[in-house]
Length: 103
Image 1 (cartoon, rainbow, N blue to C red):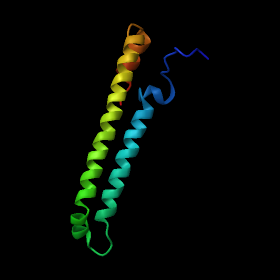
Image 2: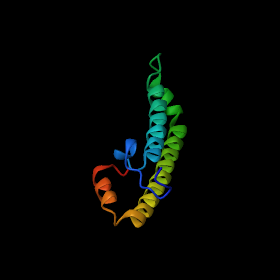
Image 3: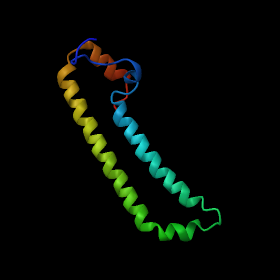
Image 4: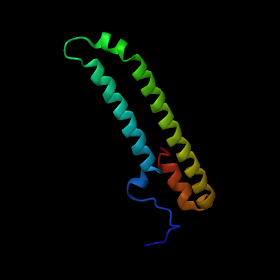
């Protein structure tokens, strides 16, 4: 072990700098998209009337998804700035930041 101040750049961190936030974003977006697909996949061809009746819940879902994504992106930005402040001068951090996705 290299200690709690060690910059982790291996494994999934070599691709995503913040894989936990990226996973959350993918999960919430996927859940929302699955609900939209379920509405349009109504077996009896009633997706348009169903969509009309689901307007308010869909608007609420879109608004909620945008809120969740905003919070996660704000958290990612905050963590990114703290990491840059802490490790920004190290060549390991600079190279890692160039190769990995902020996500």
